[in-house]
Image (cartoon, rainbow, N blue to C red; front, side, top):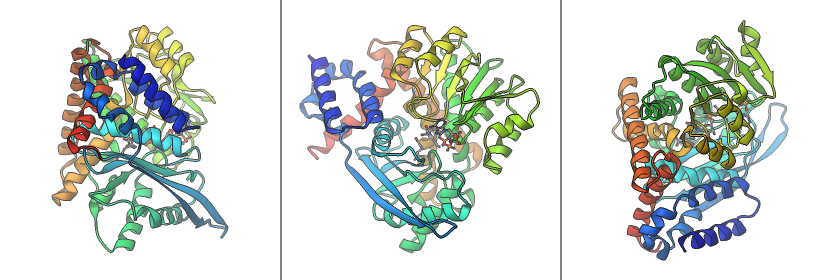
Length: 446
Ligand code: NDP
Ligand code: 2IT
């Protein structure tokens, strides 16, 4: 009965959002896990909470026009989807990548809503970005693009309304240019309007490291509940951006050997263990391709066009992008004896891959729980801005560690409560949804 109702809702959501496969995928994954909750809480269906959470509060699409270094006029599209504000101001990153479209931003905003609920820090869900491609652009071009983008975005955001941050293609440099333009347009030093700011002007120490660190804290708890530790394990990580870099750093600090990282052109296999200083030099300082790492590091090889999942490992952390770990990748991981997959990226594993990992008994840390450390630390940055304080690195990372432990335990106990021990995907979806749904019920028909 509930199953039929959920099936009908899903069908309607897919029909009214055509051509948005990533959004359909994210909604399908969540709705497929809600049945046991809805059987106990029929008021969610009576009040049409499921339909309501699948419909964004607001979607803003806008033109972004700027001039490149050669004086040519460039036209991009800007987006901000304000998905759900039941728990607080909209909160979520901005993605600058040529693949960005409305369906991708909607999937990210939908996921963000439940992820932010799991942090317990009173944040709603939103996401935005542009099809602008920062690769190969000069700092001056990136600055002019960010200024043009903020010239429209400024109307829609604010410390109590909507608080953007980084995501793919948006890091400290971009947040700086965006903040500068926001300040110029408003004549207000609203520190709390963006997170991921520089530590000298309102940023929180530890925010840069937070998503990668948080994912590894989550992995440690996942292993601990199976009486294992990271010490001595072999890890593979995809991506070599913000999340991947600080996942590598924490994995190595906790005694694991990371033998692979990647970017969209291929993977590096480094059997001796990734040299973190070289990785940061190549990616953060020089903004070069990951093949450059292999060129400078003896004993490592560059596997052009390959994902890292065929390289044997005990634990795997997809930290690049959506749908980067499919069924054939899952088969390779299982065949090589991988014991845990923890998602640093958003929706990196396909539904088929997740099912294969589940059947094989591989421990699984779902994105909306495992990568919540980034946005949680954005919440801590907002707390610091509101109280005009700056905490030490250890204070912030200490809070992050507590939050990740609590998120892990919430997922575990919720899975137990609904008779599916160890199914942290179900635990995360139900725990996040329940919190949003109860707030929406309390707020009435709005
Ligand atoms: P970055 O831009 O810093 O790094 C992205 C990395 O992923 C790069 O190595 C990039 O390679 C690779 N990548 C991007 N797109 C693709 C693609 N289509 N195919 C293969 N590789 C790709 O981004 P982040 O590290 O911030 O984000 C990584 C993931 O983590 C995303 O899914 C993001 O949504 C998620 N996330 C980020 C958080 C944060 O705080 N930053 C918080 C929670 C989740 P290349 O340079 O070749 O494009
Ligand atoms: O996907 C994510 O959680 C992020 N990109 C971070 C969002 C944030 O507001 O810090």
